[in-house]
Length: 303
Ligand SMILES: Nc1ncnc2c1ncn2[C@@H]1O[C@H](COP(=O)(O)OP(=O)(O)O)[C@@H](O)[C@H]1O
Ligand SMILES: CC(C)(COP(=O)(O)O)[C@@H](O)C(=O)NCCC(=O)O
Image (cartoon, rainbow, N blue to C red; front, side):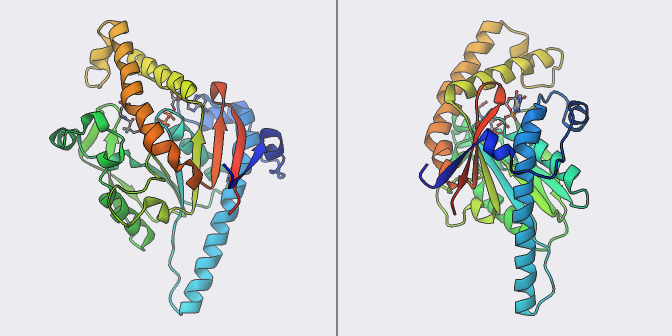
């Protein structure tokens, strides 16, 4: 990690000087049901991070304005795009939701949207046809061309851009359902592949990102979080026959747990080692987590 400066939690927490602190009560009202977020993490880590992000966003806006002026054309509204990457179960979705919530709170006039790249996975039927079901999440399981076209549309002046939706409940793409991006000031995109190079192609998704964050942790810890989330999903879907986890929730627990452990070992861990972790050095900032999702250090890229 030669290209990064390691900043301790203590040093980092001193960077935010305007005291926009948040109380536990306020935070509970802000975050989604089930999120367990530490107020200390918010005040000491996330508030300085969003101040930093806001600086980058302002800089981009100013630069675009100058460029439009120089070219003698009308001002184009480009979104500031933040990519969040890291292993399956490292906490990307939770971090993305929290960043969106806090950005909205600190900058209420900005239109901030959030989406995930799992909508760009091929549907299960297509994955089966391509014999890729056991490679879900690997680069070849995503329709990267569609993702790059989507990003290109988002950065042009289109008023609405649609994207496919993935459902964790179905563990598949939802047929005929789309999310929409409506000219946000800031767009947060989270997914394991946000910093990846495409298997064959020239356009890279990260070319579209103005700022990227990689969430990092020790493999064993991530496995614990993966298994905890799995057990939680079994618990909450025991009486939900439409859910992907229903069958596992109503069979023997050890069978379900063994299966999840096998998926972690043979799919998600392999993907982390081969394709996700190698992209870490492409991020602007690395948030390193320890036990209990506590962020213990931050790495900031020099350039
Ligand atoms: N800051 C956090 N504090 C406590 N639990 C967290 C935190 N971030 C994530 N988790 C939990 O860890 C698991 C994985 O997080 P999630 O955001 O779903 O990961 P990802 O989107 O990277 O797959 C979930 O069970 C989630 O509730
Ligand atoms: C759909 C995913 C590839 C997306 O991961 P995410 O970007 O949400 O972390 C992943 O959750 C997944 O389903 N992986 C396949 C193996 C598994 O069931 O964990």
